Image 1: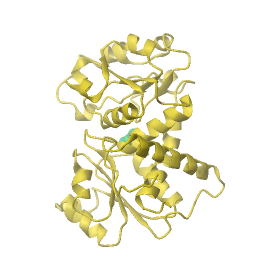
Image 2: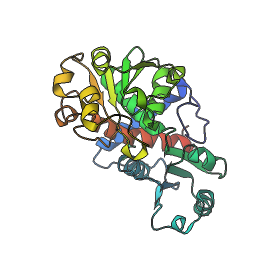
Image 3: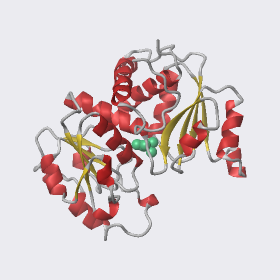
Image 4: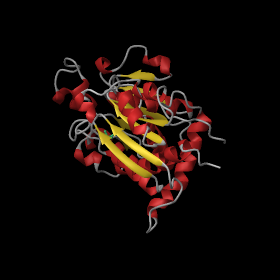
Length: 307
Ligand code: CP
């Protein structure tokens, strides 16, 4: 297909064909990281800037490495140590960076809609690397890539997204992507962490983890986002683990080929026991590996060098 989009702001706005195209391009790039010289010249002469206003390990480093593997020039930027801490606005900051001749800005920000706002105020391409509780499109894409790679398909699979749905941009991007590609999505968790009207996104709701674990082909276990919660959505961590945590004993009820995912960072012993997180059904590190290929594909497509 002919890629025409300038920005990647969310999976809500992408068609199924566009999502599959990104995954297919990522498949080509995955091989690059297996070479002894892990680099291609695709973005030679282009400049990527990583602007991270929230903490990140995986997404930040993965975008940095993706840009380097494509031979782009890379600038990195975080809130501390820059003039943002003196009160400069996001747009003023971005316009000053753009004036240095940047082609793609990768933005992580705590405010939902920040990436869209940036895209409406600057000329270069914008990639949303997570905006508040709205979307995290490259996480959604790498999750789709991993499911397709491990299970050989996405359509027809039953995927449980478990835990803190209310605060999760990962859940929203997964729901848009999975439903567009034909998966059946069940959101699972305490009712206090499931947004009202979520069924309008085309998912079913389940508050019984044992039912979910018996029925699902894939379980994507979300991190409990303690930092985003007001009040206590469940009585205690111990009760959350009892009701929704995946342990080896609970996993005995699952289909034998169940796939266990987690976007990271994992609260070990809460969403997943260490034995499950590190066990044979877990694809958590494979998700991270695939994230690099997916982000190479996204930078490549937005740079407009495809075809
Ligand atoms: N999954 C994810 O976004 O992780 P980071 O916050 O470490 O980037």
